[in-house]
Length: 180
Image (cartoon, rainbow, N blue to C red; front, side, top):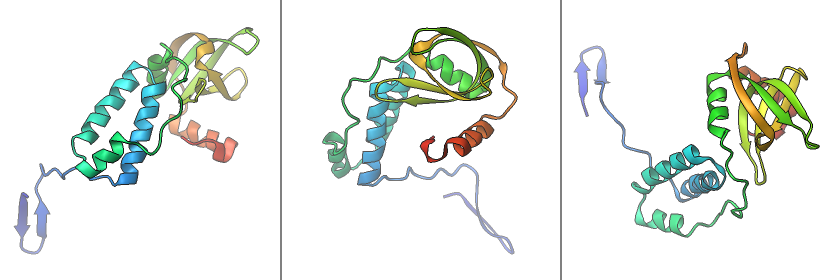
């Protein structure tokens, strides 16, 4: 390790030192692999590719004993009957990441079309749907929009609030139900 010592100062690590990867325990590997399998079943192509890349990196450092747990998992993400990944997911994730307002055309459960301006802050991947969580300017409240019912989504501009503040307000409103 590149260490520099100086009288009266002590020892200091020089820049450039990289710590080895942390080893995961059996249950940690199980938890991470469960999450990666879930993403592989329910995510869109970019998320599935990211999950495969992460799994390969994890696999490269696993011991033979832990690899056996990975090959014969104790937990599974459920049946592979998830809805097909929606083509709009990458655009929605980008809007969330960049804190962009969206003008969306949305169909409710009865098929009625509405136009909304929303401030998207999260995506939820459920067994039977993908959900966009957003602040809705029309309703002046938080709303959940099924991604498969969003006909169009156009970016407008940055929304005036920080995403972290939206998430905090949402969690305060819905309590323990918000798990993101």
